[in-house]
Every structure is written in C-alpha cells, then in structure tokens.
Image 1 (cartoon, rainbow, N blue to C red):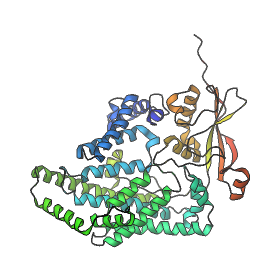
Image 2 (tube, one colour):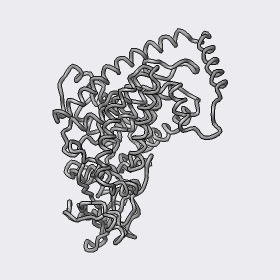
Image 3 (cartoon, rainbow, N blue to C red):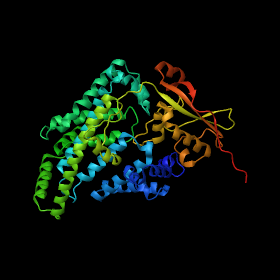
Image 4 (cartoon, rainbow, N blue to C red):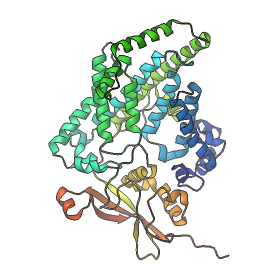
Length: 482
C-alpha cells in the first residue's frame, strides 16, 4: 500500500534513479551488491507484482497448497522489495524476516509429510537466541548512561518512534517501576535465551524461558508500534519449542472446549510413529535435500556466530567496521541479508525532536500537514497501527534525530508535496488546504508527554516547543504558460 509512494516512478526515492546510480558506480558488481528482481523492470507495475504476488503466495503457503518453491519465491520477492525500498525498508525486522525466511526454505521438507530437518530447527532456535541475547547484551556493551543508570525506561515510552495511547499512561508510572522493568527486561534478554540452547528433555525450563520472552514481546507491543516485529519474534520463540513444549504452552492459553484428551494424544503419536517407519516416495532426492540443507544450515550457523561476535565488538568499540576471520564471508553474504546482527535500542534516545511539515497558499498563513501515525498535533491521541508498518512516519523519526543525514529524501518529499503527487500524498494525512499548497517548509519542535495535570487542563497528550525552521519557505515550480 506504500511502495509506489516511497520508491515508485514518482515516489520519494524512485527505484529507477537508485539502480541507475549504483550501476554507474559499481558496474556489473551492482547486481550482486543490490540483488533485486527490479533490475528486469523498474516500473510501478513490477513493484505491485512483487507485493501482491507475495501476498497471494503467502496465502497459498498458509493454506498448505505449496512448500519449498513458494518459500524460495517469497524470500526472493521480499529481498527484491527490501533492496528497492532503500532507507524505508532498512529496519532490523526487515532483515529478521529475510533471515527467518531463508531458514524456513531449508526447514520445510522436500515432500509433504516428511520430518523437517532437525539441524535447521536448531538454527531457528539459534536465531531466536541471537536476536534476543544481542538486544540485551548490546545495551550493556554500548556504555549508554541511561542503561548504565537503569533510567532508560523513564525515557523510552515518550521517545520511541511511534507511541500508542498506552505509552502515555505507562510513562506516568513511578520511577521505581521503570527501574525495575529495566532489570526484568535485561534478565529476560540476556539470561532466558540460553534456555533455547538446552536439550529438548529440559522442556520445562525451555517453556518457562519462552513464556518470559513472549510476555516481553507482548509488553512491547501493547506500549508502542513496531509493525510486525513482535509477531515475527514470537513466531521464532514458538518454533523453538518441540511438540510437548507446544502442548504445555497450549494448555496455558487454550480456549475452553478445545482440548486433546490423553487417548487422542496417544493416537496422534502412534500415527506419527507408523508413518515415520513407512518408506517415503522419492527417498533418494529427499536424502540429497536433507544433506544439502544440513550443510547450508551449518555454514549459516558458523556465519551467524561470527555476526553475533562482530555485533558485540562493534558495540563495545563504538566502531562501524571490525576486521576478523568472519569479516570477509559476512561481507560476501551481506547483500542478501542472510546473516545479520541485531541490537534494538542499544542507545536510548532521551529527547524527542519532531519535524513538522507546514504548507501555505500565500506564504503568510501556514498550516500543519499532519502525518497519519507519528506524533503531530498535541491534542491528537496517539494510536495503535501495528502490524501495519508506516514506513514514512518511522523514517521521519530518524530524520528528526539528525536532519542533515535525511536531507536528500526530505527535499524530494517537499517537492512532491508541492507537485501534488497522489502516491506520496497518500502516505500523509488529509491536506489542511483546499487547493494544492504553493509553499512548504519544515519546522523543528521538541515534544514531551504532558503530565496528568497538564492533560486535565488542556486535553493535550503532548506539549511541544518550537526550536527552529529547518528550511526557508520552498515555493512550487511555476506553471509553464502554454
């Protein structure tokens, strides 16, 4: 729903210009560095085919109508869209979806009814471990004062990219609660993941750890908007449990009336044992598939360990590049987002600047052009938007933290607003003007949650302070006279 406005032919960062630029710089190597099916066509229709085609294939997969081939195509489609999306699809959960999707390609058996590859299953648990452990340990290694003083959560709910209305209420809790939540969160992120590496026979410990990590994700999801990240992470935790562990989890959340009786459980196990002992068709190609996927999983496992170590070193040394035995192979597979490092909120943002787009018809009277989801008018209540991921709203948060680094696409955004480009305007809220604006400028504000007393007095969720104008008024291009 957003892709054409973001990177379409008349979008904010047109993919055609991007691919032309990288090909001019890298030559034939650009096809490796930027792997995308859009090299074959850069038209908006191709972007739509990738997105809608991926949605249809995903539904087929969920319905059980297709397996390995569909997963491979889905992975290729999303990789293509991620490369095309440039900065708008460069989030850690986009990389996480690609890494999970690649492991899913290896995990699914070649033939329906066969047992999935156990080695790849361990890799899925390893990915859940890497994601969670790095999210915790990088907060400590970063040396960030807010994490060191256990005060990070006193800022988080107010300064996160897209707060929900619940964020305001949690922000008002006593400081002691925020201090305690830091210790609880670090314990879950740093200690609990090791239970995923325990043998299957230690089911109770694994189940307890998974429940703790799932509850953490639920807590994050109900106090902020992070797209599909929380759902995807929970899916990884569930995948790390065996059948007995899943039954234990189901017993905790089951709906009344939906319950397997002991004789039903025994019958299901007996059927599984009988089918496992029967010869399967295509046994030779299934054996080759298992050998190939096992080898690929081992290679990915070694690289994933290197990515984990590299991420900790980068954080501890506050560097962007570390040399080591894993540096070259990780750079080689880097363009495919197949092995990634993670570390969410390793440095806590303690202030909330916001960029406000203002438009005018005469250059004298100015009106705020609202976004749909990010913080805007102080009286507007923050909303829940997940699992939808409003890419432009998210990038506006990053742009506000360091406007010069986003100048190249902010300029294009303002120009397309003045041009009245429909695909871009659909990414924003309703226009405050009846006619297309003739002028636009970017204002810079500091945002803070109101206190309960201030909200009772004004009704506002935010209080904001003007800091500066990032641009002078930008005028629309004159209309040529016929």
